[in-house]
Amino acid sequence: MDDAAVIGAGPNGLAAAIALARAGASVVVVEARDEVGGGARTAELTLPGFAHDVCSACHPMGALSPWFRALPLAQHGLRWLHPTASVAHPLDSEPAVLLRRSLPETARGLGVDARAYERVFAPFLRDPHGLLADLLGPLRLPRHPLRLARFGLPGLLPATTALRARFRGRRARALLAGCAAHSILPLDRPLTAAVAMIFAVTGHVTDWPVAAGGSGAIARALASYLATLGGRVETGRRVRALRDVPPARVVLFDTSPAQLADVAGPVLPAGYVRRLRRYRYGPGVFKLDWALDGPIPWRDPACLDASTVHLGGTLEEIAAAEAAVWRGEHPGRPFAIVVQQSQLDPSRAPAGKHTGYAYCHVPAGSTVDLTAVLERQVERFAPGFRDRILARHVMRPADLEAGNPNYVGGAITGGVADLAQFFARPAARLDPYATPNPRVFICSASTPPGGGVHGMCGYHAASRALRDLDARARRAM
Ligand SMILES: Cc1cc2nc3c(=O)[nH]c(=O)nc-3n(C[C@H](O)[C@H](O)[C@H](O)COP(=O)(O)OP(=O)(O)OC[C@H]3O[C@@H](n4cnc5c(N)ncnc54)[C@H](O)[C@@H]3O)c2cc1C
Image (cartoon, rainbow, N blue to C red):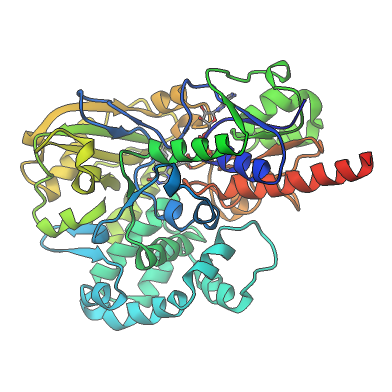
């Protein structure tokens, strides 16, 4: 019997397995797919020679993750490629707004709000890694309570309220509305201001990178390091019931709460299972990948400096689009996230060609084909874009869920991260990673700190499981 079994080889499952193995535990990871990675995979989705990121593409949280930074992932092939701007936010009839590492340079691009922007962000850049360690941790006494309060109190506000109160001009409001929209919440909901601030802060600490060769390189590096610690990964093994779980002292689920309930339901109290079943996943995404004949022909060529381009126009337009999605509608001009990996990584496409990546939020389980709508939104800021398309690959919410049952209804970040579910995920408990069964833990993005390829959910869940393993080992002595 192993000390620990991990169900799922996503970034959090692998991060958890590494934490366990580094502490001396014997670990086996079982993965449904034929390859590791979950949300960090790369594949030729369109044409031969075009390497597309199937899910995650851009990795500020991966590069800044306290756990990933502690691991020798570079020795296992992970190389971050940094752009010269994290975000470009094109607007209809003026130059694009750029989020650059330099605070003064970014501020200069914001016109009337230059000083206000510097005033808001400068305090957080004195020890950003300390702040991120607090933000990426579970709910606990923060190491820097004053700084966290300075961040957290305004962060509790809705983005619409905070941005209108702090900034007068369209440019700062648009840039930060695009950052806030990563929350996949209506921007008039509490906590969306915090998401805007976190994403902007990361852009001033590191230029949002892509992984050389594709996001799959992150998972391969984690798996390769895990192997050196003696951890085993068994792919092609989907766990559907308890009998499929390898024998182990503790089991960590890198899965949705729904799957935890399906598989471990028989060994969990009915009340807890009911709470897992009430978990909310939120909107899905509609995603396009393109093989392109050249770079995206942005009206403002400065957009090519950025790894990520936020399409959606003004704060008002983005807020309206995200609110519509939550009403079950498909906005005609959706907020879209575009990533330009091949601008930084020529290995992604044949010489002179490029990959293109974009997605927008849609109502959960939507079956609507938004290809024309999404391409029109790119064309709006990059006239001539459609002429560059050599081939495209479409993923609707059902395709995402078929590829990974964690993406319930096409939701990509482990579930709604609103005030009720941000810390209390998957259920309100003092220790969100533990379940009422002392042998069963959950370590996926459906635990704090939530979605993204950063491995922190896995790290915290493993730390919790290790305390349990240690206690049992002491009792056995
Ligand atoms: C389209 C899209 C774009 C994204 N963009 C970004 C981005 O740019 N940057 C970023 O940081 N994050 C991004 N994300 C989010 C990020 O990918 C996820 O938050 C992250 O992968 C979560 O990691 P995880 O380990 O919790 O789960 P997952 O990555 O979902 O991994 C879970 C693994 O468990 C396996 N599994 C599930 N159920 C079972 C079972 N029953 N038995 C065996 N194996 C099982 C799955 O096959 C999968 O390999 C994106 C996600 C998507 C889908």
